[in-house]
Length: 334
Image 1 (cartoon, rainbow, N blue to C red):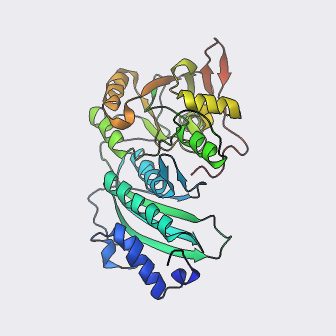
Image 2 (image 1 turned 90 degrees about the vertical axis):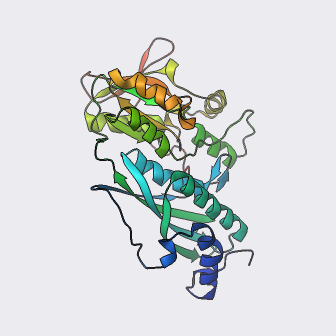
Image 3 (image 1 turned 120 degrees about the vertical axis):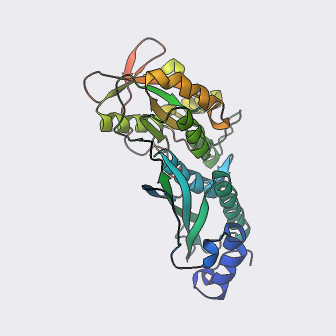
């Protein structure tokens, strides 16, 4: 069949064909192939990290990726920035009746490729088909398990005065790409999502210094949201330098035209790391040797000012509050 039908979710012959012809075709591995109701896992770590996320991005396909790549990268990154080695993923699909079988196969194939690149196995899953109009094409939920490195203590509450804040590259790429493609804005330039799995970059950072205090990936709400969360959790203030923020000219131009601030725009391949000043250059140089950290930059530092606020020293010499975002920013970004 060229499209998903309700019979593909009935649990009968068509369901079995879908599982074998699409999902097992790409996800096949020694654990998944046992076809148990629960995956049996062997994990050689004393502590585990567990996370789950759902993906409803619109459009499903965009420059730099698709919903399948996004689902794997998003969950791998949540594990990696927690100081864990990503090991296993599960995935559940909610598919709209009439959805293209060819598009589904592209999504599944992309997920399999990204999982292999990230060194994780997809070991369990589920498929549901709902009536046309009840889902926008396909939604994906992924959950992940990772083993926490014993000599690492990365926590949102660990930021300390004097810490230097490093990002691994240009910000706002994903969100600006999605909103422009969704609305068919014809901006010039090379807008492309930064969607990527960051676990190998985090490993490189921890190899040179395993005492990094905080690492967070800056997804919905962008860098501004993440820094406010860390400021609250660690009871510290943060000062950014506007002239140090790495932003592509294409993103900056589109954001200005549409009235967005790149600090609040979603990323899917960017992290913020809080590193003691004495080790900051060491970590920064290590990040720049990795493909996903070539444009890494120091953007600010933690201060001992009273209160839990995020400020920015502006290019014109002023100082402004970088508050939490409120209201609807960019829906359906991930």
